[in-house]
Amino acid sequence: MKLQHILPCAVLSVLAGGGLRAQEVLEKKADYNEKVLVTAPYQPSLGALIKPVFTPHTLDTVLGKIPVECQIISRPFATAYPIENIKPAKILGEPIPKLFNSSVRAGVGLMGRMPSPLGELNFSVGRSRKYELAVYYRHQSAYGNIKGYDRFKTNHSLNEADVLGRIFADKFITSLDISYGQKAVNCFGYGNDALSFASVVDDEFDNYKDQSRRWYQNARGILSFEDNATESTDLRFDAKVDYNLNLTNWRSAENSVVVEGGVSKVLLENRRSADVLSLGGRVRFEDNTYRDGLRDGHYDIKIVGDLADDNSIVQEWVPGNELRNAYHVDFRPTLYFKYDFVEMDVAAAFHVFGQGAGDGVQKSTRFQFNPVVDLKLHIINKILTFFIGTDGGVERNTVEGISAINPYLHPLTFGNLKFTRDKFNAYAGLSGNFSRHIDYRVKVSAHFMEDVLSFDYFRYTYMGYQDYYGYNDFRPEYSGRVFNLRLRGDLNFRWGRQILAHVDATYSHYDKRLYYSPEFKANLSFRYNIVDKVTVYTRMTGYTNMWAKDRRGEDVRLKGCFDWSLGAEYRFIKRMTVFVDLNNIIARRYYRWYDYPAYRFNFMAGLSFDF
Image (tube, rainbow, N blue to C red; front, side, top):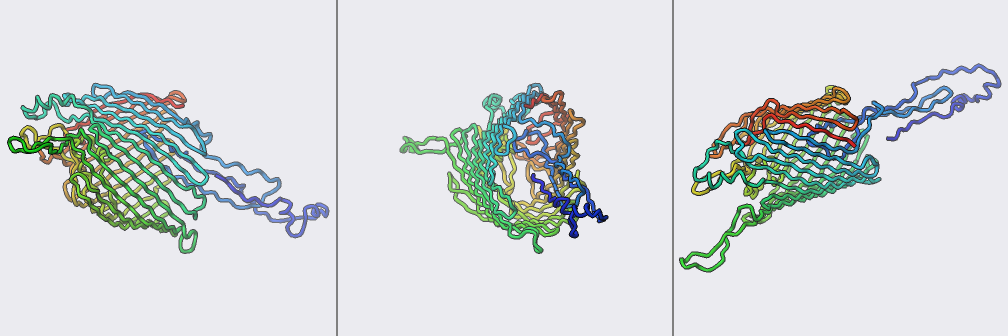
């Protein structure tokens, strides 16, 4: 950051005012009196700054976005001889502690009676004004053993890798992010005393414990470009290409391509009619194709010959290869206006979406328009802001998105990938800062929605048993038209580097029954640096009772959840830290999905090394 200060001319030129030169004054030995207004020397300073971090972060790190505000006021002033040099600007809290570029983390936990290993790597090339390069990898496995459910496997694993490169040029910033992820689960969900059909036990359930894990692989590449405008009135634009490939172990594949970009231009700035007035626009195109593989259990009938001796058609079952394709175009011209205490964002969102023709699917195209208005009234600067507005949107339900919510899915369930539509919503709320340490936000909104995602069991006919549920699998289910009322509150507290706390709560009510959707959810996280080397943290999450369906299709109520975790870190030498995490310390048995119990008390301990 450049600090500029306008200094006065030389002292002699100051004394020369009124037609007298310094030398003449000395020669004539005349008395010279003049009133001089002396101000404090210029001492610019910067408040506490947080170094931007672009590298990937660990999953269990609580990130707090701390607003940075800096104001430098410079005025010329008269000085007395001799002139002193201006002191350099300082960053509060000097000296700055050494920052390490990379770290390795390893740990082992215990879930039930089985170990759970953890490995993590963060690596970056260091600090540079021209480029950035970082690598991230994480592995975590859980070979748990849940009491009462140890008849079948309960294994889980997660692998994630990410490579990020960014170039900081004079006129633009460009980045390439390539990532890979794999998550695997064993669908269990059957207790040791689960009710089953006698004729099915030997044929199905005895082999259930030997089923292969179900995994989802994801490879993704994001190329982004953003201009590096130096003036506020410069034309600003950005663009991004996002390619996403998803694979499953039943050879189903999903390809998603997203291309988006935007442009904006400041038309007026610092005028009597507007502090800022800018005009712009954004466009987004998404194409999503899902193809069933050859091992998904779906078969088609193929005619292979003439009539047989019994006059029946000769046919055979062949593996199916279903295709689902969908697209979504979002175009929105935008307007931004700010004057005094009024701030407003306006956009007209045009959505064109639908699906192409596929196996048993007809081509369709739909249209949705959403007026987007966000009006903010800064009633008390930085303390109280009232906001009100309207919005809406369209979201494609994908294999990646659905499996991220519920991984215990039947492989035949992805053929019905619908759009979830927020046809129109209106909201209002308050936000601001109670002090420089506390900020808050409260928002109430009403949504007119269609096809909200939910889940039910996958049932079919097997060996004469109607609605047989087989393995403990789920299928996506959609709500149709539904009205949703939401109320959400957020509160953040920061005290330097010592304390970071966050709490949020959401109440969400639907006018029809949605399964696995609790009405009330809340989260709390707290981190406290007791001393320079010791940090403790805690996390709490909870939700109220929710509706679900059992294996017979009957509605049941699942009890609410309260999960409390504690952890601590101790940096016993400069580069090495030990940590311990205690999870579900009150050992609650709760069910996020019907008959899939969560682990009770479990822990993980390990160490990290910085380099």
